[in-house]
Length: 297
Image (cartoon, rainbow, N blue to C red; front, side, top):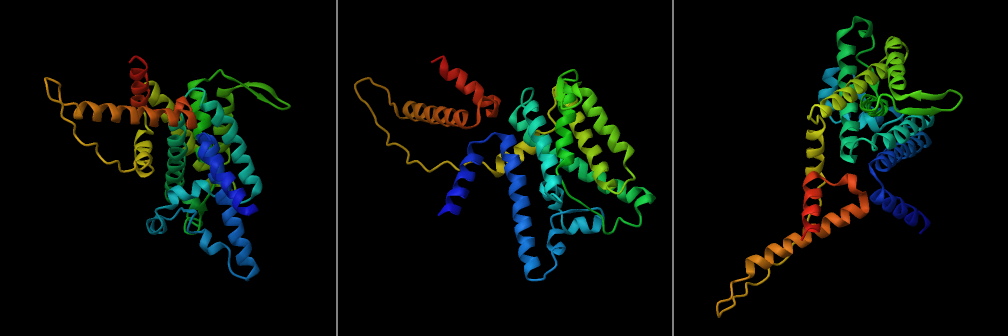
């Protein structure tokens, strides 16, 4: 009973949470699931690394073609508790800051775009530079760092002079935070974690591409959000159509009018329910316009 209550509580918090909260929950849930499975495998003296490799992004293209889902799954995987904690803290801090200037859908799309570009740059570098020729066949990537850095850089491009408070350092402008992180990754491209630093640069590129494109009126995350909306669209329950009522004596047939009125009311109820659950920033432009038009009636 206690376990069921705990899971139900998590589900409710996830449902009511904003996009940052949901991404945090997904990353933590994946980490806990992987850890628990590995503990079980260790107890029965089985290899813990074999199955996890099906979720990590391989550098070798032939392996990737057999595991294409890893371009998405790797960005929710973490190698240890401190790896998870560091990424989630940055996601929480800069995700909240990001939402001050962009929408929740932008953050959702950019998280995935940053991870995708980071993964692609990682594979490209490992197959182009001779430095990696001895490790390319077995190299694998995991972690949310590329996605998080995309969010940091996008926010820095949008508000470069925004002040950020750091313990023991003081106030630093956001553009310097982003530049420092990118410079650090450039300097450590040949370190032990070379793949991770290269992926970070891909995430940074995605963040810059998104913020610069949006300022010019082009949203590079639109295709990702459209795909997600299609995959996770709420299925509307079937409603029996009302019978047509015909009025005589000069009165018009009001079936079409009543049907359209009911459809509008149902749509406004749905938008208001979404507004209560996820906030105004989660509404699409069409939903905002429908809500505005309804308020004038």
